[in-house]
Length: 154
Image (tube, rainbow, N blue to C red; front, side, top):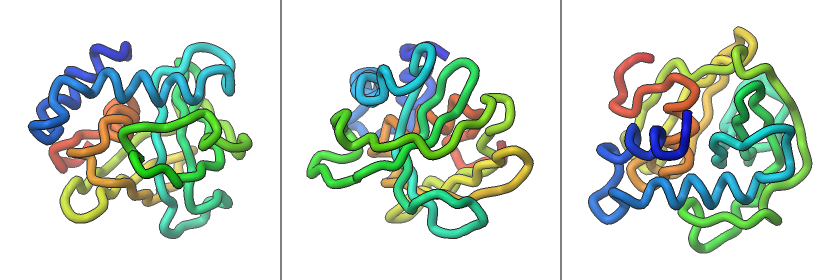
């Protein structure tokens, strides 16, 4: 999906003060991940792995290209996170999967953190992030991977 398509898809789910600003946040995250992967970065965002079988650190940045989903170590220390990110926050590469092997199967956007269930190569992995209504980058990644932001099953 193109940035404007993602921004249009997430805009109705953002808080009033962020509506119309999703594209600029998506672009900031794309720029932070630029040059870290082959091809064009479609979307990128930080997620936390609360538990599960994945051998990833707690904070990861998922970067989407047309062909792959790439996980990088992520340093969330930024007072304006998740609306702003710097390239230095995106750390070393951890894992790569074919884009077709990763999808979002469930989303719970309510509460202090939003939760998403990712299916990665057939295994489910729960992740969380700052509330999607205030987190255009994570909302874009979820939508790009087939998730629904209204909480209905994907």
